[in-house]
Image (cartoon, rainbow, N blue to C red; front, side, top):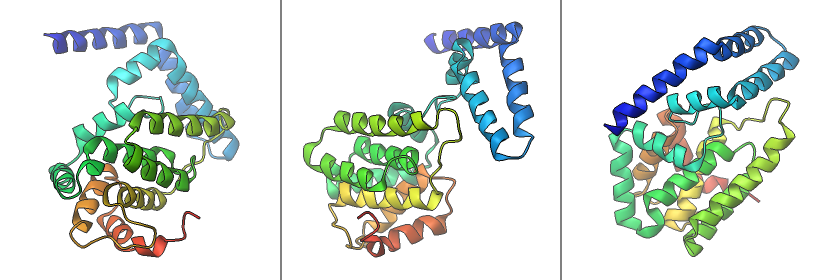
Length: 234
């Protein structure tokens, strides 16, 4: 009954927004800008999208409609929900097997945390900071403080790009950081140590589940080349 009520309420919100014309006007601005080329117009498009997401009712509808959180930066709980909803069965199996093999440091909440940091932070937060967070988490088991540290660091950078296009990390870099962070957190590996043979397929399935846009070849190469990245975060 509650789920049905929520859907009805969401639909009414959408209808009310369209009657007021907020969605139509802001969407036209965004589309008009995106059809043009050039760095300046791209920056204007980014600002328009931020303005659209900031409108109280539009922002609400966006969050209701998208599990990723709409126009907002993807928060840790929203990321977890998105992965749980979309990840293939191979991800779930690999997560269970990884925790059986390596214990608490491989529990799903911590795994999702480093995946979230890697996906949302690379390009904004130094990769070495994400690796350091993984190393601390293995010892302190304090997930809340690591979330707070990460968000504070990321927001400080985002403020600098409030009126311009934010930097985006490369997919390959995000995948590499995710693999290395999982090796540090779950397996307790030191820099330069190769991924154990029994853990390699589990890491591949977990990282692939979080980065479904990455090819299987890219993920496999990231896992197998882990030892070669020993000095990548110095």
